Image (cartoon, rainbow, N blue to C red; front, side):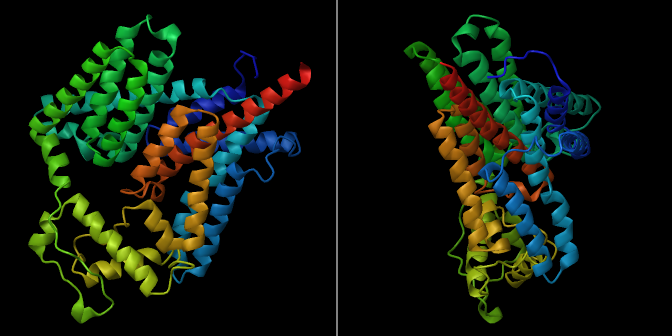
Length: 430
């Protein structure tokens, strides 16, 4: 591996990109643009020699997917709406190309990059919690510390904040608790940092993220603590946290009510006279879980019934079709129009069709397979976390979701390339 410890411009650019991700979209975009401009400069002075990936799937997917978005835009009737999505999806090839070229100048140290990302996440979260506490002292209610209000100062969606905190917590645990040389050093500080990170994660109140994280973190902690005493203390702590959540009204309302499921069988139809029309009371009391059930049934039925399974509705037209069916069942206007289907897999299926859906699934499988082959628990946990959240949220419909997913996943894929290159070189020199 590259043993050069000197800090280069490439290191600083990568650090800047990592710092920008947890903060505002504007700051994150500025850092990404700086990184891309630096990449263009490197490609120009090297006459393109720094780009050596060729047909590597870690570049083929983001580039191919962006071209699909372009094609889908012009396939749509509402081209203008499609073009608005093109700008956002440019992040796929832009981020990957930037990371690949930077790695060609100096092999990326993923742990250093994740340290910067984690520190930035913690600083950003600390600022938001401090602002929330200040608002409480100024007379506002305690709800300013929860969910959408928590990230409102930076205009951050709680789901993306929660994902950043999950990754930060998993990384810090992996870096400073699992590794033997850190176990006896500064453990108290590490535990405090982890406690704050987990506390802030619950303030985000994103159910899917927290439930998935809880399962993964139990597995990770089980590896850290080998003695029965420590394991008993770990599970006691988890039960205590669960009890506090249930007994905290704001958190309990968010978690327990959102999991309520008491809806009769819903059968979508293409006949207006047979459509189930939800009244205002039902819409006011629908839970998050029930709403996602309705969206899933609607999406799967109508994409097949409308003969759009092969190529989808198109990126420019898909929301118009979704809104039409919301109106058919009385879920719009004035309620859920403009909402995506809150399932990334289904959203890609109805937007682009079955082949693009399979292309996307192949990229997830490709990444997971490499994580397993290289025995990288942190990458595998990241993919499990994201893949499960995809069942409940359309993360890749927003700037932050694309950036978090493609930036971190590409870093891990580049790590495997670097390690394989190092091992081949070492084998040749022995």
